[in-house]
Every structure is written in C-alpha cells, then in structure tokens.
Image (cartoon, rainbow, N blue to C red; front, side, top):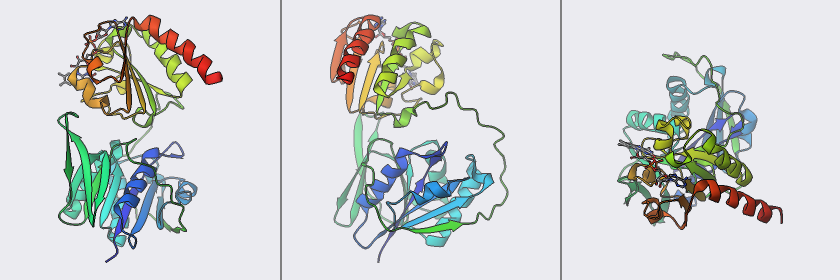
Length: 321
Ligand SMILES: Cc1cc2nc3c(=O)[nH]c(=O)nc-3n(C[C@H](O)[C@H](O)[C@H](O)COP(=O)(O)OP(=O)(O)OC[C@H]3O[C@@H](n4cnc5c(N)ncnc54)[C@H](O)[C@@H]3O)c2cc1C
C-alpha cells in the first residue's frame, strides 16, 4: 500500500528554513515510486511561503495568529490536526529546537518509534536505513524501524535538499485553536540578518585563544567575507568574550558546515562533539600539539592574530578575481 511521508517545515522571519528542504529531500530518498510526500507549514502569514513548497505532492498550511511564535501546545495541536487527518506512515522534522521539542511528543502520542539527529539515509529494498553519530561523534550507528508510523529528526546540512518540482495540491486548513498553557509575549532577535549557526555553510569559531571580546573582530570580518557565521568554544563563552548562543559542542550547538575554521580552540572532546562532522576543518593554533589538529584537514601553527588577517587579505584578493 502507498505510504505518506509527512515533512514538518519551518519558517523563520518570513523565510523557509533550509533544513525543511533537506527533510523533504530525506522524504524523497525514503519513498517508493507510489508513495506520497506531504509537507506541513504552520505559522502566521505563511500561506504564500507554503505555496512555494513545490517538492511535495500535498502541501498543508495552517495560518493563525496563535501560531506566529513557537509554543509547544499550539504547534503540537496544529500538527496533530493534520496527522490525525492524513495518518502519515512517517513524520520528518529538522533536528532544530522545534524538531527536538515536538518530535518526541508526537512519537509518544502516536506510540511511534523515533530516531534523532540522523545524518544520512539509505534505501535497502523497502527498508530505510538511518545513520546517526553516537558517543559525541566517536562512532556511528545505523538503525531501521520495525513498525510504523515512525518519527525522524535530521541534522541540518547533511541531507541533499529536495529538487523535485511537483504539481502539488494545496490545503489551507483552519486552526481549531484550543488553549495553550503559556503564550509568547515578545521575541527579541539578537542580531537582525545574522546567519543561523546550525545552517551556516562556513563557520569561523573562536576559543579562549581570542583573549577578549575584541579578539572576535577579525573572525567576524572573515565570516562576513565568506558569507558565514561566527561560533565559539565554551572556553570563550565562559570567559565572557561572547554570548553563549554562539557555543558549539556537546552542550552547545551541533554544526556541520562545509568549512569550519577553529581559531585558538584546543579541541576538547566536548567541543569536537559539536563540529567534528564538518566537511573541511581548518585549525589555527599556536600550540602544534593541540588536539584540534587531530581532526583538522588543514592545520596552521601560529598566532591567530597574524594568521586570520593574512587569510582575510589572501581571500579578499582571490574572491574579487
Ligand atoms: C560537561 C561538559 C560540557 C562541555 N561542553 C562544551 C561545549 O559544548 N563546547 C565546548 O567548546 N566546550 C565544552 N566543554 C568545555 C571543554 O572541556 C573545554 O574546556 C573547552 O572547549 C575549552 O575551550 P577552548 O579550546 O577555547 O580553551 P582552551 O582549552 O584554553 O584552549 C585555548 C587554545 O587557544 C590556543 N591559543 C592561545 N592563544 C592563541 C593565539 N594567539 N593564536 C592561536 N592559538 C592560541 C592555545 O594553544 C589553546 O590550544 C564542556 C565541558 C564539560 C565538562
């Protein structure tokens, strides 16, 4: 019997998050020819955005002022409304703050199995195999589900985005709003237009070696040049050189950019847990024995305050050619 793969899309500040297209890509990789891909976007004033989602057979949107900002109660009720209606065989989320919050709740409600933080997917006949890092990235495990429905979250920047352009059917649903135990009063964005660390293709990260808040300035300049974001080790956050929202690692954000440049970071295991899956890792450290060099593809032994401006100068010349 044909299956339905439901992808939960996310929007932020009027834009669709990249991970939504990646989760759609995962749905296309999982399905057989007869199966259907459905996508659901909930929020406020998101109908036009939902209509741009062309990589699904069915597009569902629920637009309501109560869904303007994420609250577990309202989003859960909106999602369950569609899940109860279409009874999907699989539900795919991004491994984002929202996905991590809602996926287990939905899985528990449906008595479904869940696999989190998946970085690759493979089809083996009718089976879908999900691989994810374990033990802080030191090993990988591959799992499959033995019963439906199943719930999966995908780590951003790992699965190829869906390219398909299908003739989708659009369904704009009313939100049968019920009560929520709390409401968001206000959302204050730290920096307008800043690139989301978990979706950035390039990350320039600073550790205790940057020595001060001002020490991050050359890193920010390089990130701006490369269209990337600035991240940090917990050492730098603890020293109050930057905000904890920049922390990468076991107790911070997990990132998988194409390029990760670690500046003045020793490479503690807890930091590696958040960045070791990056595609290309460059380490700049004045200590040639620093453990970060063991995971780096390219290592530069030297003072970051000499090296980062040099990289900036060289890259500026290369990029304007
Ligand atoms: C439960 C737990 C959870 C944790 N979670 C995290 C986490 O999520 N993320 C995280 O990052 N850490 C985490 N940590 C902390 C982690 O163990 C390390 O203490 C931390 O990562 C160290 O940060 P650092 O590399 O910036 O500092 P340090 O270890 O002090 O390293 C600084 C490095 O900078 C180099 N350096 C100094 N000056 C320069 C210069 N001018 N130019 C070039 N290099 C220079 C030094 O050679 C050194 O290698 C956690 C720890 C625990 C116990």
